[in-house]
Length: 211
Image 1 (cartoon, rainbow, N blue to C red):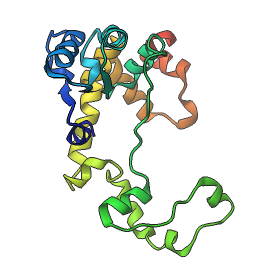
Image 2 (image 1 turned 60 degrees about the horizontal axis):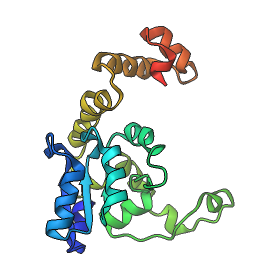
Image 3 (image 1 turned 90 degrees about the horizontal axis):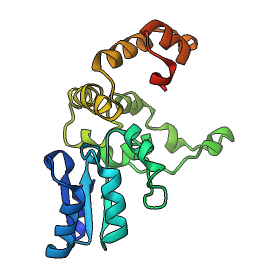
């Protein structure tokens, strides 16, 4: 998405924060702004910058530069949102709706249907005509990357593995074994048997750690 934005913004610059190594995000932004006249900095995976909250504050306060950033670790962003409350706006990027899937994958456009429309029975024959494609939609095709890679399940497994093995431990200072054991317990539990107390008892973790 950021790369697509960069194509339409000639005064923008895209970078992935996992390539910055030990570089200071603020200093990188300052050089781009002052020497290269960049007005929009597009930063992917910003959680790889350990001091990104402090750097974003300094960029906002001292540079005439707009920053658009993404992260696959929402926990990290929520923790930082309190300190950056006057400086950033967080937006959730949701997967494709079934209607969007039909439009982008099949070039089929159907009328918009809200929850109230469904409750009031205000759907049309067009909404029911493509029900046979719904199972296909659920097989990983609610994610935009399937448009480039039809066999998207291996990619989805890689994404989940990256989040579990690298992103969450890095953002939350947790051991991978604790995360793996907790997920295993949740996956094998009945729905009504999962809460902070039951997970804490079975995984020998404190409730505060789980929260």
